[in-house]
Image (cartoon, rainbow, N blue to C red; front, side, top):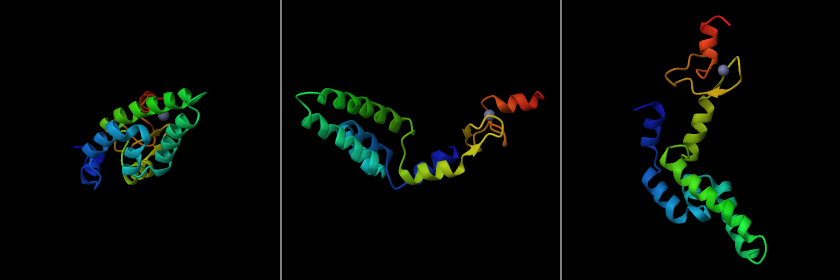
Length: 129
Ligand SMILES: [Zn+2]
């Protein structure tokens, strides 16, 4: 288990609940309220409200965005890309910026060697460029 896996495991928010909420109530943002992403949750709710308010005209546009977001949230939650807000903050605080390309990377990631990212810059610096 990696560092983030451990942290997620210890979280008081359960991933299974998050996934279930995401599937059944994710269209109106309840999954985001559960994970502590309040503002984006409210935004999702507003998208659905706008669907009903503008149902005669451009409502379809709002529901289209909401449905795409709904599906994306389900996938992201299942893949641990959408996590409780406290864990997301901890993740962001640990991220480092690559000295060469500026990309943000996790220094605990097995291939990363600070101060360069593993995406390409570390190999370049090893090769002497
Ligand atoms: Zn880099």
